[in-house]
Structures are given as C-alpha cells and as structure tokens.
Image (cartoon, rainbow, N blue to C red; front, side, top):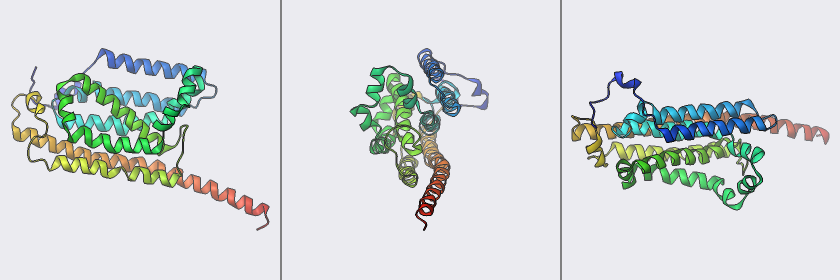
Length: 276
C-alpha cells in the first residue's frame, strides 16, 4: 500500500517483524547465558553486545525500517547503522571469544578450524568490505533486493557480518591474527575510499539507477524527486560513511599510543637490566 511522503509525525511508526525480533531476543539470551557461565567475563563486552542489538533493532524495526523500501536515503541510513554502528559494537563484544570459552567442544573446534582462520584473516575482512559496499549499491543486486524481501533481509544480515569481520580486525580485541596498532589504523583508512567512491557514483547519477524505486516510492513521487533522494542517499554514504570511519579511528589512535607507551617502558626496562 502506497503512503504519502514522510513527515516528522511518522517518527512513531514501527516496522516490527516476528522473525527479526525472535533472532534479536535469542541472540541476547544466548550471549547473556554465555556471559554468566564464563568466569570473570568483563562487563564492557556485554554492554557493547546489548547496545549493538539496540542499534540493530532501531535500524530495522523503527521508522528507518518502515521507510527503507520507499526512500533510498532511509535505506542508506539503515545500512550505515548496521555496518558502521552495530557491527563495530558487535566486534567490541568479542562473541567468538565468549563462544570459544563457554560453548560445546564441537563449536570450539570449528572456531579454531581452517575455515574460520580464513574468514577471520584481515585480508578476508577487508576484501569483503571493499567488494560488498559497491556491489550492493551500484549493481542490479540492489534492484533485486527491492523486489524480494528475503533478499533484503539477507542483505541486512550480510551488512552486520561483513562489518563485524572488518571491525574485529580493526579493533584487535578478539582472538585471531592481530595487526600492529599502527597498521590497524591504516587498515581502516584504506577502506574510506570505498564509501567515497560509492557515494559519489550515486550523487553523479543522471537517472534513477534503481527502477524498482519508481513503483515503491510514496504517492506523488516524480522521477526527479526519486533521483534527488538517490543523490541524497549517496551524500549520506559519502559524508556519513567517511565521518563514521574517521570516528572509528579515534579509539585506534588511543590504542596505538597506549601500545607505544607500554612498549617504550618495556624497552627501557630491558636496557636498564643491561646497564645501558
């Protein structure tokens, strides 16, 4: 059913789905049980996990989710919330460490197995992010998502998973191969052009690149208004995506400075032992 254009009175609209909410509640319960079973599990990762669930809920079930199939700009806000807000919070929650610590033997074996070593490798997370962002916004895959809700929901899950794989390497808090703190900063900065390129490509569109939007846009929408909204979405991806990436660099710089400080003290202690 078509509806009129968005207004601020629509902020109280919700897009509640049974399956997504069951998944979110199940994830929250499983993490909570694992945190209780784990000995001395820190409070901070638990808070990060539940904050990530809240962000995911708001991105998919609030007014953003209500309009994400009608306005490209709303769709872009949702994507940024999932991949650059919820996903980093999930990375800080260290779910793999918790599962390895409290899960059954077969799960621990799988996490330490060859497949997961490949998936958790820094190159895998970077390439997945580098390919997924433009592929889901600049190809026919986006139009396919508009036509089939199950593709849309799968895409939302992919944004969370790929964002998690990328930021778990960036923050280096969880098990697996860890990069030098300075290299982690380079790792994040190297991904910024992906958001910039995707956003600028959408801004420079001369016609609506997603024909399905013409049938799902609110009543009264014109081809020019739809194109303007696509360009607005591109601006959100460019400016918002780059800003969130730069925001993520702040804790990385702090981690690098702390690491260098500790390393300097260790080197000074070793030199003192040698009498140098």
